[in-house]
Amino acid sequence: MNKIARIVASKWFAGPLCALPLFFLAWDYFQALKQLEQEAGVSIRQVSDANRTSGSLVAISEEYADFSFSVSDEEFHEYTGGTFRETEENSTEKEDEADSFSFTVSDDQFDAATETLSLQEGGDQDAFIARKMTESANPVKAGANVNERFLHETGNVAIAYFLIVLCFTPLKRIFSRAKLVSALNRHRRLVGLTAFFYAVLHLILYFDDGLNRLFDEWYLFYIQCGIASFVTLSVLAMTSNGRAVRKLGGKRWKKLHRILYLAIPALLYHKGWASKASPDQVREALVWFAPMLLLQTVRLTKFFTAKKGN
Amino acid sequence: MTKAPFVRIPRPSELSEREVTDESLHRNRRDIIKSLGLAAGTSLLAIPGTAANAATTGFPTKLNKKYIPPKGTKLTEYKYITGYNNFYEFTTDKYEVRFRANLGWKTEPWTIEIGGHVEKPLKLDVNDLVKDVGIEQRVYRFRCVEAWSMVIPWDGFQLNKLIAKAKPTSKAKYVMFSTFKDEKTALGFKNYPNYDWPYTEGLRMDEAMHDLTFLATGIYGKPIPHQNGAPIRLVVPWKYGFKSIKSIVRIDFTDKQPKTLWNTAGPDEYGFYSNVNPEVDHLRWSQARERPIGTGGFAERIPTLKFNGYEKEVAHLYKGMDLRKFF
Image (cartoon, rainbow over all chains, first blue to last red; front, side, top):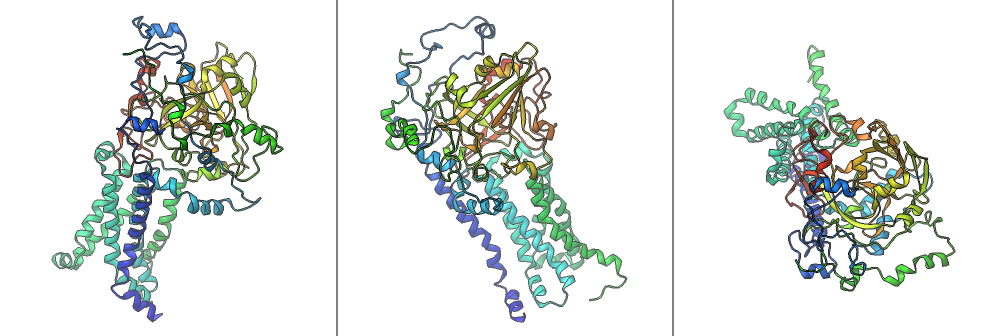
């Protein structure tokens, strides 16, 4: 046990662990780019003859029909105030049948999307699906909604480290004599700063649309929870170094760093009730926070024991 | 403007080989299937690896040039349309639906029951219905309430053609749609008990009768996959996506506004009308902008259009109505 504790205590231990998610995220991002690159040559703004003849995914129309009408001619004339005149160009008659086509996909693509999967009778659907997701879902998951996915993932990583660092002190109280726990505690600052680092990544992604998203959403409660949490983490990050401890004095510094606890309910709401807040999403947030919250109850023992032993 | 056709559509011969199904293969599909000893319409379904979707009639379809978005609009790729789905009956994970919905679920044969204020209640087989009315392709914009969007080439027919068959009486003021509820097929009924299953949706009669309102049985010229609402689903392009109910089993004509699953689940968040409107935010997020799916890693979100860009076509239905109150 001592050997492990020594490895954990070494100053090179935490760094790689904190940087690890970054590698996964980077790999994910390159997968996404690969998926999206396959659509190269078909951009939103270009409609050239080259695109048309390649059967590309660009819909071709000169303009909107400058009219439309609902079911009956009477309703239509009422809507247009009788000012519409049918001409050869905007005639409602069906176009020449010979000149028509439709957008289609190949049989292979269709089969891939509709393949019947074989799950044995009584088999564990969840495990089967989990396996399928890792095998073949990547192309879609990689490219479908890249920004939302990375927003979600960076947020998750940030909250994960946030929860981890909050567990250090309770663990120290419970296992006060385990060398391993005190070894972990040496990395409190780094783990805390890592949470802040991923929160910064999270924020950068949030601003991929410039300030538009903030302007649209600033008044929403879960956004404000996120902003408040980020401000809290920034304050803690900026005062995390030794100079701050000396300037503020140990007692004041300790008091300042207690604002971390305010971030707990804020982040719980931010993660659980962001956007659609599907039942699974809420459940996931509660499951994530429960272990750490359970550990925090250790602090309450301060109130119940007259004299705390070691 | 010249006398040329309204839009220039490439001839089939101009499409690249890759994109076009080998015509002889396509035409002989039925013969090939027959020669395998399986009659049309019976179980290819339990055989893993084969497509199992209903409403296989009516293909290939022709694009209706009246219903396509403006020049330069990019269609969403098939893999995203069929791989990024909200179908809470199966799961809330958008990437899982395509697997959970294809574990042997049978959507052929499929009957739609029509009732309520109609001259006579009907039971229609989807394949017969499609053979009767014929289907065409339309390219509609699709805007989810979650602020993402797609551009989808649906194959199907106007809802008002089915309504004409149903012959509703004058008492019918609304149309109500219901989807399947089978606990053996989908786990969502048990996993998410707080929703008022089965999924129901509704439209006002004039919305239902509008030419834009569409019943889709295909996507991209192929039968609609399970995860997209096989064998037949509604598409109301000027409303948020959750109004476009999937896998319809029942259509009822009612005199009162029907209850809908999302309106019941969140009366302050999901309205009955749910017209796409950047000026009226959802309770918990803004509707001013949307993210087109599959268009780029860190692409800007695009501004949401009122009525999802179909303002010219549908705004008159809501003349004088407070769109904030009736959201």
